[in-house]
Every structure is written in C-alpha cells, then in structure tokens.
Amino acid sequence: MAELHLTDEILMAFADGELDESVAAAVAQVMAQDPSVARRIVDFQQSRRLSRSAFESSLSSKVPIELQAAISARIEAHEGVNSAGKVDLHEVRRTRLIRSFPLMRMALAACLAGIAVATGYFFGRQVDREASQIAQLEDPLIRRELSRLESGRDLELPMGRFRVISSYQLANGALCREFELKSASRSAGAVACRANEWNVTFAVSNPAKSADYTPSSGGDLMDSYLQNLGAGQPLEEKAEARALAEFMP
Amino acid sequence: MPTPIGRELVALLPRLRRFALVLCRSQPLADDLVQGACERALVNANSWTPGTRFDAWMFRIIRNHWIDHLRRMKTEGIMEDVALQTQLIGDPGEEPILSRLVLAEVQQAIDSLPQEQKEVLALVCGEDLTYREAAEVLNIPVGTVMSRLARARKRLVELTAAA
Image 1 (spheres, each protein chain N blue to C red):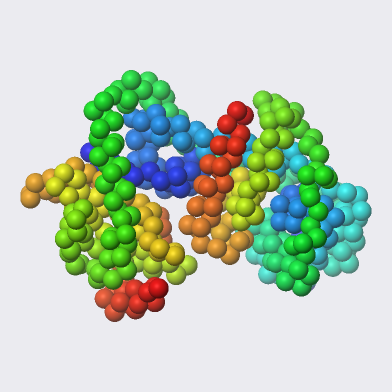
Image 2: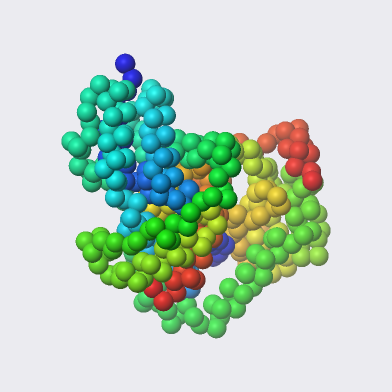
C-alpha cells in the first residue's frame, strides 16, 4: 500500500479543511491507522481553537467611541450618509467557520478503535523504513542533483537510483521538481520546491516492486498534490534549463 | 459614484483593530492605523470588487498602510509593550471551557512568536481567512503561509501543553 509522507503542513491543512478531497482521503486513511498522526491533527485543531479564543478575547475588539466617531465622520464625508450606529457589530462575523470534514471524524473514530493494531511491532518497523527513506530525500546529494539534473535523466546515488521526472514553475515563481528514488527495498516519489534550498513538500513511499511493477495509487496522489499546488504543465526542456540556471546560487 | 463600503467598514472595526494590534503592538498606534486604513479604503472604494471578501481587502490595506508607516517613521524602536495595555476579558459565551488563566497563557505564547508567524496566525486562526487569502493579504506564497502557520501552531502547542 502507498504510504504518504505527512508533513506538518499537510496535516495542518487537513485539520483546517484546506486539502482537496483525494489528498484529504489519503490523510484520513493514514490517520485511521496511526494514532500519532491523529494526535498531530488534533494538536493543530487545538492550536486553532486556542489562538482564536485568545484573539477574540483581546481588549482590541472593543472599539473606543472616539475612533468609531472619527471613522463615521470620514464615511459621512465620503459617502454622504451616517453609517455608524446602525450596524450590529456582530452582524458581519465569520463568513467561513472552520470547515469540518466528515471524513476526518470517521477516521478519528476508526483510529481510536484501532490503536492496538496500529502500535504493533510490524507497523512500527514499516514506519521506520519509510521514515528513513523519506529522510534520504533531503540528502545534500539529492539536493545538489535537483539543482542540475535535467528531467528524464537517471543517476545512481549511494542511497538508490535517482530520477527527476518533471519540473514546474508555480504562479509565485517557485521552482518545484517531481522525482523518484528507488532503493533495493523501497521506492519513493516526491516533490521538492526550492526557496533557499530544496525542501521536500510531498512524498509517497512504496515497498519496491519487481520489474513488472505497475504504478499504484501513489501516482494518483502525486497528481492530486501537483494539481493542489497549482503546478500546471511541466516545463519544457529549455524553460527548465533557464529556471535551473536562475536558481544557481 | 464610489462603492458604498461604510456599513461594512463599521462592522469590521473590531477585527481591524485586533489585526492592527497584532501588527504594531500598541493600542494608540493601532487606532491611528485603523483610521488611516479606513481613510485609504474610502478613497479607493472602487478598487474593492463587491462579492469578494471585504475583510481580506481591508486587512491588506491595513497591512500596506503599516508597512508604509514603518518606512516613513522607522517606529520599531518606540513601540510600547502591549502587555501593559492589554487586559484579557474572557468571553464566557464563546469558549466556556477556556479559563482566563489559559487564555492569558495562550496570549503570552502568541506574543512570543516571531512577528511574521503572528500575522499569519491572526489572519488564518483569528480571522478565518483561507491560506490563499492570507497569502494575498501578506503578499507571500501560499507555501510560506503554510510553513509559518504550522511552525507557529506547533510552538503554541508546546508552550501551552497544559492547556
């Protein structure tokens, strides 16, 4: 089964209802099996609730009469009407409450039911193997190759066979690259984006398959993630070379 | 004829002050900031598109106004400590479970965060903007919003572990 590398950002986005459905479903699945993931999501929900309460209760929500009067005068000057005092200050409240996921609630319930299974020895070992491969994805060697290897090329590295699949330029100009790392026991697909250095923003890790291996659901997750990111079409060869050159330190 | 925004503006005042306070950490300065931003908004009312989020538009104006102010006045050195002026007035209707003590602790934890994290936290958790909307207000990539927000919230959980 494909295993999803769950960064804090992804779990937070899940807790905030900001993920698209397919990625959220994948997170919910992992959450149902892994109480530590559920715990991290609950923490993100809790931090939102706490900070919201803190902001709400601050003195600053009480508008002094002088300020209210000054603003009303400016409004009157601009719009020729006296808008102040006619509006219930609570009328325009939250336009969007925290979006809740029925999926998440289901997963939480399943998780609580399945704690004994999820903490089993075998599962722990699986997670360890996956975690160590995920950690390798940010190895300095890989970061270096991400800055220079063109898409479609393979390279043998100490931690496995490395291959860049494609490059994308996001709307904000950030350069992101999809790549693979295959070792004898595992195969990972990942996306890294470059700010000051390359950071892995998404990774799916699978046990290695035989030569006649066909892609599993990991490919769908990757597509969803890239779509979520607003990646658009992969860069053509020349555009990729230009983008890589621009990012040279 | 400019788009009338007066009603929305008045309704939004408490939230504008709250965000202004996150930016400048001084009550009198926050009020000046709100007033200046409202003036700007009224003059440029036509640049708001009805049907889009008015609050996000105003938060952007207030933040730009603050940045301009910083550039002009270089006021970083004279900001007052908000802790001296802010008293917590717990709202029992809103969150009955949270005691004033816990709220004070959270408030303190928020105050200890780096300014860039505090802004994102205020917009997303305090004002319910989406990541994308917050990114537009702050003029930064969505990915940066997410990483700052995640760091801020992990830190809050650590600092208020007992809450």
